[in-house]
Length: 78
Image (cartoon, rainbow, N blue to C red):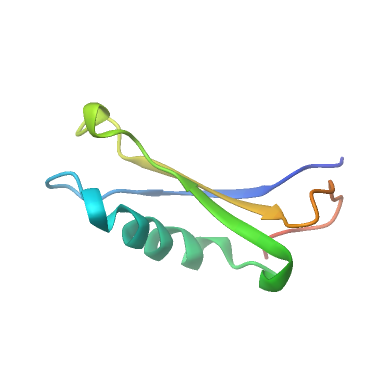
């Protein structure tokens, strides 16, 4: 079935909200889980919880989206 992205999840660590470190934490948590097959052909995006949702919400959603905007029937992640 055609799809627009591959995905994975990771979690923010316990402790204070990461603020400026959010991007680094998302990348370090997402990239190892994504195992993108052709990294030059996809953009990686992370959707993290807002400060107001902490500590209840810690899930970070990671997406690998084809850069050409097309849907794919193949695998985006390994």
